[in-house]
View 1 (spheres, rainbow, N blue to C red):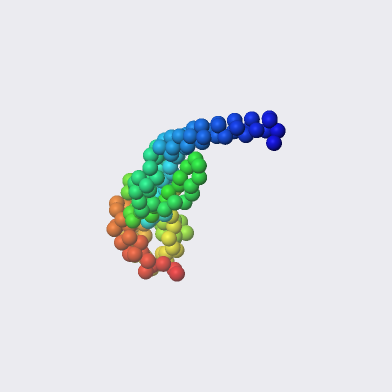
View 2 (view 1 turned 90 degrees about the vertical axis):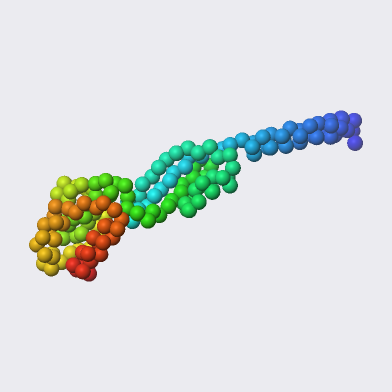
Length: 166
């Protein structure tokens, strides 16, 4: 072994423990630092509406993070963001605020945001046999029936099911 090679080996052996100590301290420091992730919370409601809430979470412990979002399913996860989804056993806040059950011109039972004559359809169910509907039920559907809660929503869908063409 040449003198130059022995000097390099000696210096490497002398410096290596110092480098390993610095590296170990750096990795310990990084493990204790919080990480920030963009979190997207998706809520799927009974009426078919999907809402998204975007926030930034500072995560000190993944265990704490996952316990905070217990009941949520992971849709996507990467270095920048975590997308979580939850099925809500309720109708959407949008439907509670301004939702109406009504009938489209073709006789399809539908959910509208706003009264049926000028509103956006957010969900359709089934074609109604309009001939079987009593006149007052036809008029009620043409004006729109406000939807206040989950129980009323389910009851109305069930009430009009016997009039479906299917």
